[in-house]
Length: 400
Image (cartoon, rainbow, N blue to C red; front, side):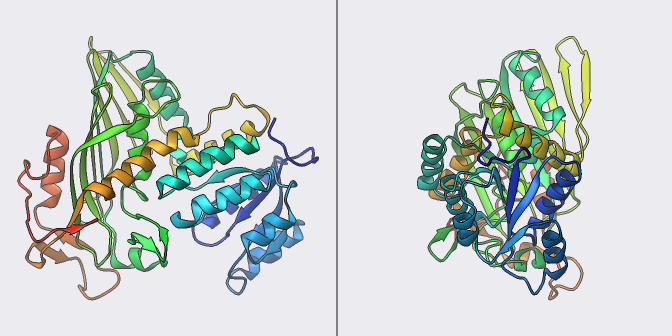
């Protein structure tokens, strides 16, 4: 059992109630209404914007703190679960602090943006005896776990290839919403924000998870080729196609973009020696055997997946056998992102390939890269590079 406090109901805390913190706060409200937790502490760094939430929290006996350091110092040993729905560059630092204060942790994805931080979390988890669950919500979803079980049991034979594609157009305002969107670093802290490390990180991680050899493993993979582009005025990339290979010779193809239309909801396809399988965002998972027999399972929408995540994390407090997305799984995604930035270059999209939807000068404008959408789909179907699919702009590349 991982209950730190003497309370019969687990005591929870949350760092941040704005932005993505609103989602975690709503999950906590739902759990509180069912009597599953006591929300005893919250960090609110912008009280002038959150007066209504502060009043509600205090009415339920929740202490409000200005900083996470103050909260964890004052509440040390009294928090069973600390939720960390903050910016990427805060994940590791806050997770380590919460573990050392005696709390178990649910931290938003990704796990971390630096190799040393990944190792530090691993050590702290072992030293404190607490657990870290990473908020890749689709991992916890029942249809996802059903599909992993089918692959692990050999329903499609030996897994040979995994492909993922997602296209979500994003306007300028997406990169203006905070001080780290599209950034590689904030001060001395690594961020490495990108479609693969943020909006589509969930599905990249699922691809690695499905490719993992064990039932509860994600695969480590070596990058064989990477094409990174940026159309927005950012440091990082907003379009990527990455080809990888695992030590079991499973080939992975990962493609994502914020810079073309129409939208294409995330989809993962898996090819085996005796069948195929797939996973479709907020839709379904399926397995088709070599004989043509097909089995399908519903995949919950994002709200349902988040609720399953929260239920699993709360259950893990009392039962260590409950499956959560542990650092040992989530690190495979983080390691891939780190390798990508260490060894790949980002190519700015030249202006002659770029059009903007709507008013080109407004924050609502979306960059549309000529020829990219067709090339993304072609490369996805054929498991090739964008260049082989006919998209090969060649301005001077900049190091990621």
